[in-house]
Length: 545
Image (cartoon, rainbow, N blue to C red):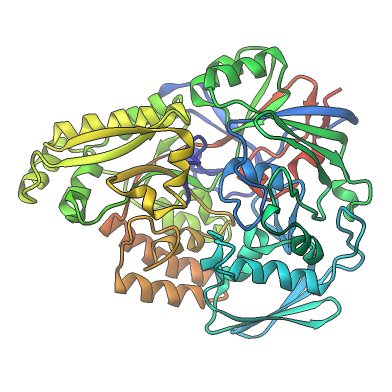
């Protein structure tokens, strides 16, 4: 479910809500909701035709870390996707394939055995072994690390080397999601020796990182930029880099970022501000592409002891949202009202079930008068609800203003509290930063194409359960789904979680929109969708001509 990742939304087919096609990677045209210009969703851009010495990539913020165990936002993961790797890999068309592990077996529901790829070199030239995998995974579990991914390992009893290239995880109970998350940050592998050497400086500009990806970290000039250089000894010839180096720049201001694309100062970037979408599409300076996404914009409830602790108030606020106009204003018309907290694209692992389990959901209700009545029944008229906002992205302010207006229409006093971008991000990793706040705008997404991953964040005590919502029925249903190895059967069990979440609204769905990427005229080859967070996207970028 995650944090300030509020700029990009939707899935490969949430934009295509009138269809029942799954997220297969096929190109599909669609008319934008709200009568805007049409667009299509594809998993990749046209392939590169040649190599480059270098290209420049724009991030909307500087990474706060390059420590894989602490990376929990778009900027750090966008860089790390090219530097560090996982046991498995999420592909641009939202499938899971082998990465640093060539295979795995499950001799019983509580045992996972991974066979590692042989001959893989870290950037310092040392060879990856089972000891490195054990150290990397155990570090996620260590409370001293403070990893937001630590809860992914909650069922792990032990992680052991069981052969030169074999690692075995033994679990207290079955946990399907743990294995799937080996394709995301929890499955990242770093050199054990380097971790010990770098100590507390690991992942900082001073300490750096030493992984196995197609690029290595060349420099990090804090406040200015990050440079990656080609790893000539990379193990996967399919993803041998087409560029010798990548230079990342950090531009927080949306208008300045658009100008960087238009001027060519930046060759490209993911998550283009929606306020600049039409300008960039018609500029002639490059191409704006839309890709698969597993994300939806939601209003996460942070305090269940205040007015929003009453279900009728949560229901009322949901009913008062004019989602179609929010899509027009916040997403440039490129998107759809969200039917559920987890987006349609999060249902990509068992596509045969998506039409039955997601598409049949009713459209969200918009009824101001009924919402006003619910507020009155709850005795909440005139009560104050504090919604945090930020200049981090224009969409945040647009949605916040719309929620404030909706609240006033139904008798709630929605106050906006503006915080700096860094403080906004802190809300999602520091419980103390949520004090005095009732709501935050989140971009809830899956790291893998399994909707169960999203719904884990509503479990009692989960790190991503920002409001500490607790429901015994939900917890039991989650455990049932998480012990089912068959994706189709698991999808049916996940639909029960979706039903409870829609009934209880610990998070209020708002809208979905496709992922996007801008590519200047000189480059092409980039994946277009959210898989870029863990797929080495920079390796496929090369010359357009």
